[in-house]
Image 1: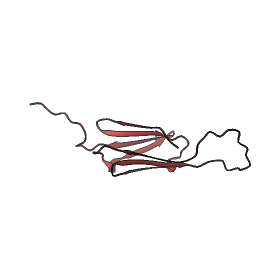
Image 2: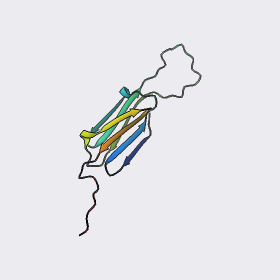
Image 3: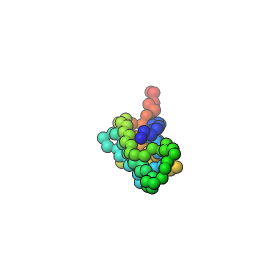
Image 4: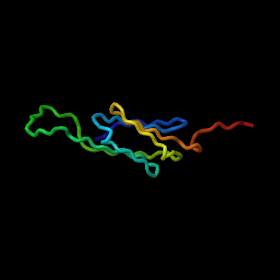
Length: 106
């Protein structure tokens, strides 16, 4: 399975969004280690009755694994993740030193 992912950045944080339709929150795991954000999950088939005759099967089941390398200067201990309506949103704050700052001209 391959799930679309959006990664954007502003002055304060990096935001990662990925659509995971049909997944439950407990089926998805997020890990940040050594500057690499990894999202994994597994969607199990709900086809339990072996006697059913399927005419069309388009939904996909199985596991996925996505990893992206983040820029330096993130606060890994303050990562926030939420999951609502099949969309996983991960917010990774930047450290103060990584935030852009205005330099006064003297």
